[in-house]
Length: 98
Image (tube, rainbow, N blue to C red; front, side, top):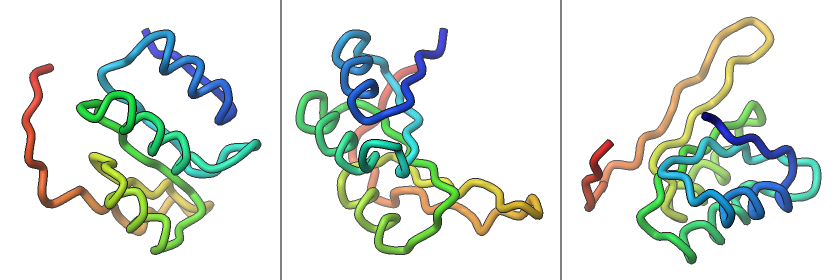
């Protein structure tokens, strides 16, 4: 069952309480950046799979997310329904079982 959080604070609480195997994380949250949540998740559980998603496309965010350990970075569709693409992390050094 999916667990949802609408803020950085809620995301950290939910992650610490549930320790999910995978996380879909938006960069733009009302009380901060999903990049901060990514850093905390990777500090506490480096093997966690975190997929970043955003509708506010900025190359710097993409680079920061992938360097910070995000498994993938996906851009949400714009209002016309087009997606500019995604940037999967190229050097996945570890494997995981579903």
